[in-house]
Length: 220
Image 1 (cartoon, rainbow, N blue to C red):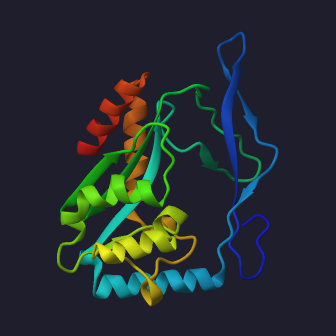
Image 2: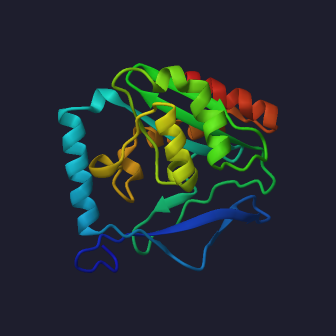
């Protein structure tokens, strides 16, 4: 790998967006000035393997995977591209003032729930609990169910964790905590990618059209 060093796995990735169109109608892409480097410690990898093995053996059926996502009319695939040294990036259209929605989802074996979060509402401990957790308490309290949530502060701050315990919602914690820097272990990330591609193909332009497209992609 480019720039690899002992104990690390580093791959440069470059973010691009369409800045202008020349007189022949061809998109001109601009590379960001700085490379974005992803670091993975050897210790991180070991923790990920141990976590995956434990849940594959014993508790995979109990887990519910959750996450938030911003959906945009610019969706249609990742704005990041993995490239080899010397390759050119593939430009994609980008609308500056695109319609946008914020959603929270939870999935598991036989489970798939989607919540549209209020527009312009900042997600904090109180809103996370009121918008995402409380409306789904019956699901989250089912016997043996364990909620996977990432390490974002609204999810894991003292106030949220205390309320989750009071509500009898089990989460990953302690030795079973979600490994650091491991979004690819969460299957909902793959679902978000599929949803983004479907939304991009829908041609949604307004917020109302975007909500219809997101719901249809989620249900599909």
